[in-house]
Each structure stands twice: as C-alpha cells, then as structure tokens.
Length: 346
Image (tube, rainbow, N blue to C red; front, side, top):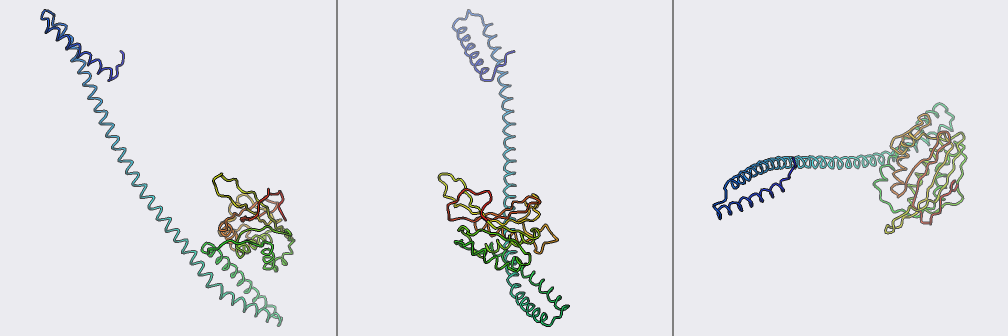
C-alpha cells in the first residue's frame, strides 16, 4: 500500500469534498440523476475524514509528548546550569582563599626571615671572634666545637637568606636595567672565592659578555646558585664553564609588537648528569636529589626560576646521565641577535 503523507492526504480530502459538493449540486439541479453515487461519495468522504481525524489526534499526542520532553529537558539544563554556577562560584572562592593563603605565607616567611637574619648575623660575628681567640690559644677540642656551631649558624643564615629572597621576589617591584654581566660575574666569583678555592675548581668564562636587561642583585643570586651547584655536584675536581648564546627572536605576526631578542646564559659542569625524571622536578621547591652531597634545603633553583621569570626570561637544564649538565637562564637583550652557535661563547 502506497504511503501518503498528511499534506497529500489533506489535499485528497479537499478534492473529495469538492467532488461531493459538485455531485450534490448536479443532483439538486437534475432530480433525475441517481443519488446512489452521491451516497457512495459521501461515505468515502466520511471515511477519509475519520482517517484524518485519527492522524490529527495522534500528531497532537506526539506533539504534546515532545513538548513535555522539551520542557523537562529545559528544566534539566537550567538545573545543570545552576549547579555549574554554584560550583564555579565555590571554585573561585577557593582560588581566592588559596591565593590569599599564599600571600599570607609569603608575608610570614618574609617577616620571619627578616627578623631572624639580623640576630643570627650577630651570633655568627661573635662566633667568628670566639673562633679566632681559641685558635690563638690552640684549644683544639673547644675549637672544633665552636667551629661546628659556627658552621651550623652559617648554614641557618644561608637558609634564612634564601627564604627571604624567595618571599621578597614576588612582592618586590623592580625596573630592569642594563647589566654589565662581566662585572656581575666578577662579583659572584669574589663572593664564592672561598668555595672556589676549597673545591680547586677549573673555571672558564668568556672574555666579553653581551648587554642584557635585568636586576643586578637578583642575577648575582642566579649565578651563585648555578655555580655553587656545579661545584657541589660536579666531578673531582670540578670543571665549570660559563658562557652565553644569542638567541634569535621568535617569529611574530605582522600586527604584533616587536619581541626583544633573548640571551641564554649558562653554566656547564662535569658531574654525573641528571635523568629526565629528575630534570622535570628540578625547579620545584624543596627538591634535592643527591642527599649525600646536598648541603642546602632545596629552595635554590625555585628561587632562580621565580627571579628569571619575573625578569621576563626562562630557566632550564640540558643533561645526559654520565655527561654532565648545563643549567641556563635567559634575559632580554638590547642587541640584535645572531643565530645561536653550536657551542656558545665560553
């Protein structure tokens, strides 16, 4: 049986109505005509009307069902939206609370470090004086005890200094200035003179350095951290190379503002190297790998990361187990960058 859609069916009924009315008119005009044909046509028309009525009822029921489902779906969507808005509000509140907690903790660390640093410095000064006095008297046993106390106090002083630096970097607002990196490195060598001598290091560096933008006190801390780690975790004796690479500018869109070229400064050691797993964790807080030789508390590299990123640069490491490591940081340059070399400068 051929399937007829509702529109076609309605047209057929309309035509049937027209034929019925036309036949009725002819019958009225000519009483001699048989009324049987009219009755038959009327019967067919009534049957078709009944079919159409059932279809309309069915379509109405389907429409009501669809409308009810649509209302339910809309209500469900609104409920989900309401729950999502509540969760977003809770999440935003938690983010704000955690952000405030971080600020409070850093403010606390800054205050504690500041309040402890000065009195501890006084203790170290007195211990140095006592050490010199006992050294003149040749009291070996007491001298060793005082030296141990003095060493511990200085270690505490380093920890407090790093904690103070870590907390202050986020809070302090600075304007980067042009750095004389050669002089910065010379001052770092002066500050590390005792350590460089104790480790009998072979240190090499470039004769000249490029101009970069940064903040001198912070960059000194970056170099000190990298170089002291190269001494502590390098070979025997440690061989430490300092150098730099001029990096090309990142490609920019035509309408984008010009991007300053970067300089990559680095420290290469002859240590045991690092696995990829350890490299991924290096610049997180309180991370140490070589417990036998570690003398710090794991804040150093996280301080380096925070400093360099605030100055608009990046930090990283390149290392192969058994072949040493290269730690680097980048800073904006005021010079035109040339393509980086394979070995860098140094």
